Amino acid sequence: MKRSAPYLALIALLVGVDQAAKAWVAARIGLYESIGIIPGFFRLSHVQNKGAIFGTFNNIGGRWISIVLLLLSLLALGLVLVYFLKTPPSDKLQRLALTLIMTGALGNQIDRIFRGYVIDFLEFHARRFYFPTFNVADSCVTIGAAVLIFVFFVRRKPA
Image (cartoon, rainbow, N blue to C red):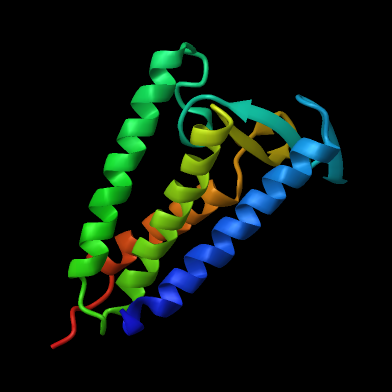
């Protein structure tokens, strides 16, 4: 358990940042409104995402999709946790990747349970291209997945 303490602390920190940012956006930016930060590139927007990461399945609607996403997210979180516990403590990079994935899943899970939707607010765009609005939790999942891909396919295995 001692070896997992730094990872638990990172989860607590990043989930706290994610939830604090979402609360700030909900309190300060009206729904579907935006605040320009870097003109022509980045703004904060208040969006309610009832779908999955980056708004996937957002337009399907209905209570059932929320329940399915909640159950799938819980299942994924459980599987990642089991994989984390089976990862040798010496494999810090893989454990970090799994920690980030768990953090993101947990951050959005909290929203789904207590709000019924996820607050997304980070919006990047260039000219007419808009990247889907996302949040800190989505960033954790994406970065964790990228690191995990690196671990599996690029990094040399220790001898």
